[in-house]
Figure 1 (cartoon, one colour):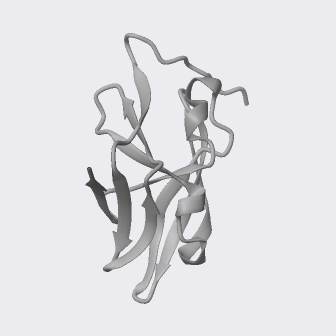
Figure 2: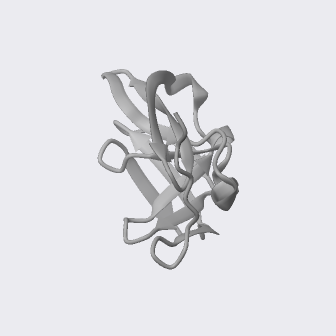
Length: 123
């Protein structure tokens, strides 16, 4: 099956900029990611998303999921669940391992669902 690859443009803009300050991600009070090298991805009129380098995410809490999705602007997304003392948060994190060229900066970065984790930006 051939997937349609679309380019960002005036009808569907995507910008990626360095996030000013420090971004932390917590689950149940435990910090699972901490970075001063995060990127802010703004896509069309969706809420901005923080992408943190995978190197700044605690690998010990990650459990690779079988879930995959596709975005015609970014490519194939892979998912991770977060293992905590209280159980697992299913598919709380996604990453584009081979993003399309228009969003190449998010390679080796992970994003987090804001309704599953606590994301804080300290400027």
